[in-house]
Amino acid sequence: MDRGLRGQRLTAANGEISSSSGRMRIGRLILLLAPLAILAGVIVLFVYSKGAGLNVTPAAPIETVQFGRTVLSPGKIQLHLRNTSPQPITVAQVNVSDAIWPYTISPGPDIPRLGSATLTLDYPWVQAEAYEISVLSSNSISFATSIEVATATASTAGGAGALWSFTLIGLYVGVIPIVLGMFWLPLLRQLGPRTMTFLMAATVGLLVYLGLDAVTEALELGALLGGAFQGTGIVGIGIVGTWLLLDAISRRQKSIERSEAGRRMALAMVIAVGIGLHNLGEGLAIGAAYSVGAAALGTFLVIGFIIQNITEGLGIVVPLAKDRPALRSLALLGLIGGAPAIAGTWIGGLVYSQGLSVLFLSIGAGAVFQVAYEIGRSMLWNDAAKRPAPFITFGGVLAGMLVLYATGVVIK
Image: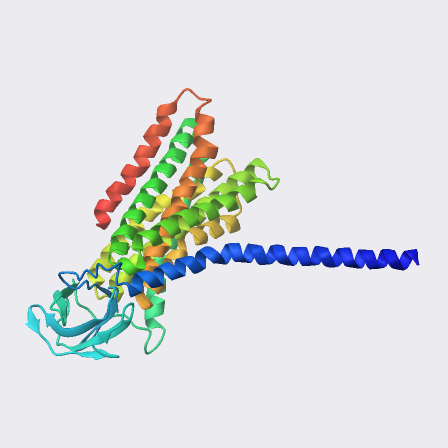
């Protein structure tokens, strides 16, 4: 009898606890949803009151157009447009080098907000000539783009020839110069501690300069995306997200028990990853130059990046100067640092997207900044505080930046 009574009491107590827990969950849900419901009501009120009664009409329509990929084929120019303004846009006229030119547009001249269209011109363009193209909306607002050096756009149509060509360009730009820079490893073993400190500092300077260059390019390209795509926000997300991800990976690696040689190899791997992500952005720039018909610019970029990237190969192997790593490990480092240039040329040349370019450039910037910080923290400033030669670090960082500045003059 007592046992049955105790069971009833336990059942009742459990029911009360369950009921109380359910009421708490409902209360939390109400607290979560109530501000959102009120906010929705405020938005509805604002819209139906036409901006709190102001109903201000702009003096001129706010219209912006983003130009995507430009495709040139014999007798044709194809422009990919995206409407990044807050209202629909109607394409009314196209001018090519100050001459009105007939065109077709698909799916139609009316482009909704964030919608895209493909504009095709039957135009007898001439190889290596420059062209200025402007698109006018129905409100007589002009949007301009240019073709600096006209040439037929690379395409995968008809085989894998273009893909193979972009692969070769990525090898020339990324893998080959970085591997050649790594050939200086035997020489590094013969250098004294001050020279090694100088080279490590030069690696930091090199990475910082690469990061600044990538940020500048990303911001310039992001400004062309239009307000709706928030290019600056993409840059911030790419830099901060990549920094935090690499920092988390680095901290995880440090928590693993390793020998001194193992830690130096881990640092070389982090440097290779950072440089590889940066080379992804370089490949994008080269591939994009070819994709828009600027073959001369693309060739010039290839030559400039080949000269620059040999110094990046040296930066990868500097932490390994005291060791004798296996050839397989060195080959892996070279591929990690250089092979992303191949993927970059594929993306830039065959499926080019300004938004992706901004993101990848930002990822590359965040990667090299984080790697520069990691090298400085673990191998320069901690050790430099124990040595009476702080100006070696200063001179090395400055020298690394000046070397890339000089190669940048060649590239640009």
